[in-house]
Image 1 (cartoon, rainbow, N blue to C red):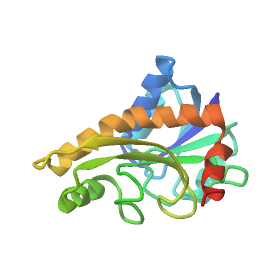
Image 2: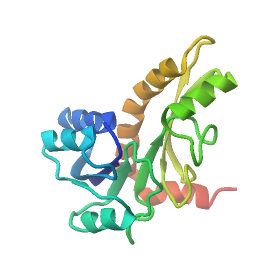
Image 3: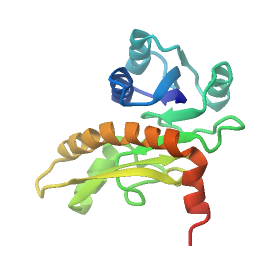
Image 4: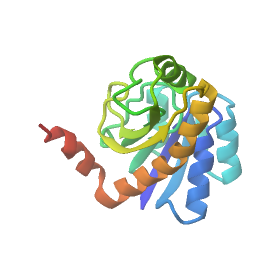
Length: 195
């Protein structure tokens, strides 16, 4: 079972999704702590409601000081809008979800509706989400799960966002369960030993 910290910056619908999957037994994890880099966000209120220890911390150092007080083996970035540097020993245990199919529409500055507007502007016919391990660059770590959604010619960025979020709700728990089953090193070895 994964012992997880969740880092967020906003309302965090992903935390709701994790909680629902844990409650129905389909997510093999326990949320030990929730940390937000933004004070007084809805995500912290939700964490409080669900009974998760929750804190505000303004940067990596403060966040990692909090995390060292909890027994965790996985950190999930759930709408966390900063480049995160994990504490020693957890460098390869940080999962992120990106609202596009990496390597498209990713990197510094590509998050949230910015991604969906770029997808619309390019006229692509397929989008989706990518759950990947985070490293010291935006959207560069090994991919764990990708889910696709077909797009229509007249989909608005908001409609694209809704379609993508629907598959995010499946992909992130699936990825956590895969990491629990195979271990984080399995995914890092796939790219380190690749062609």
